[in-house]
Image 1: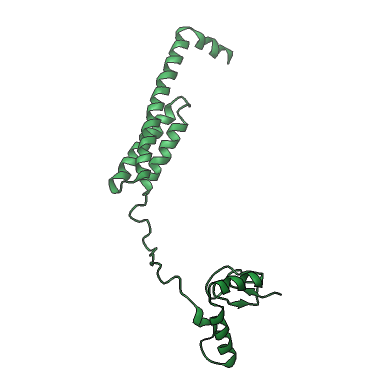
Image 2: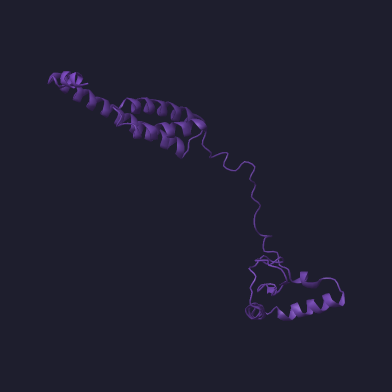
Length: 176
């Protein structure tokens, strides 16, 4: 098994680690590449001094080269992540009803009218507590679905009335 060397801090690992246990950088297989990158950073001599101190039993060792790159990252609390901007259940129900209204407008229009009205009610009640994109999208989809449903109901009512006037409806019923 070959030694892996960190090109950032020079840590030598005997295992199969993909990342350095000291600084978190990606380990390299080729010792020549890692050492040349490490030497170019100008830290080779300090690593050699640390290695000699470690072998002689003095404290410090390779940990004295450690640099904490995470100290300047701000802490992010996840306790109430998205609580202020999150959608409530009524807004989501309004969006689902609006999408169903648009999709069902070709089924004689009646399901689209029902889903559109339900979507408008749910989205309006959900938007009272918090306004965000999902509530607005639910309202828009529900209104579009309701309009398409009403257009489909009127269209199919006109078609059926024309069939009744032309006596095609009686011949269709006789064939059944």
